[in-house]
Image 1 (tube, rainbow, N blue to C red):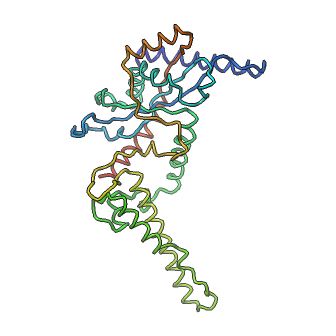
Image 2: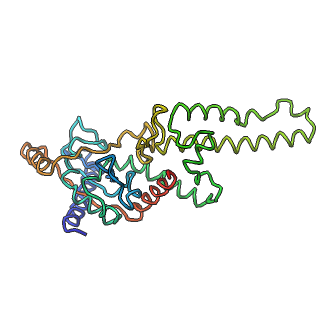
Image 3: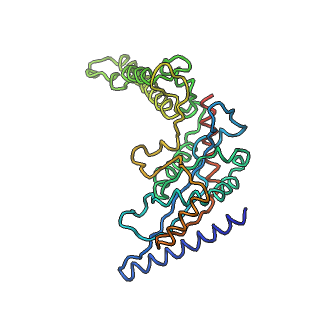
Length: 316
């Protein structure tokens, strides 16, 4: 691990400890501190700068956002800067620590070392947002998979199979056609259509037949719904029939939907010298901040890499 990253992690611990002490003092004295301390999760992904550039070996494992580090900010409290939100200094701080963040990414996921640094993008969100919309979801999903792992599981459905389930042509990326197919099939196989209102008057054989049809419809309805959601999640949809290119939609960024307002990426980083000069000017005006980064648990990072690899395999 680089000396710079080690120093930053020690500073992170120091800032976190100081913030905890100040928070306890606030509770005891019933008086707010003049500083606020916030933590954020930084994710990285590989995105070639040219659309014609060939993707490098192993790059699919980090083609979607992969959490790699945490960054903290200790800054003057500002009535216009809500606690826990994304403060204006954040992109500047990430720009200053870009090398350390990249080193943290390489330490947890060596594949980043083989990729051009200029083609690695970064995103950020509050720790609370990450745990609520990403971490808890992934843990729940992993737990569910352990209980329901099975060769016939819907989770194993590929993009090709999803199109086939909806009766679409191979390579179809037209969102209007996908929606039309889904609406038609979901109506056709909706289980409520297979419940007889006068079932009491039917003979036993007829009841058994209706129940079989209902169970088949339930299975088909689930597959159709999963196929539709998979196509939307995987970014294969487009705005018109002329497009067959992948839109680049991110599974990671889609988690939480519209509720996840604290996610921002990709970030437009600032040149290191410019970011450092901006910080110096803030310090001279008495509105500077302290910041530090620390790497994330490699097991956590690699669980997202495994997910990215699985998603990439489905796209083939």
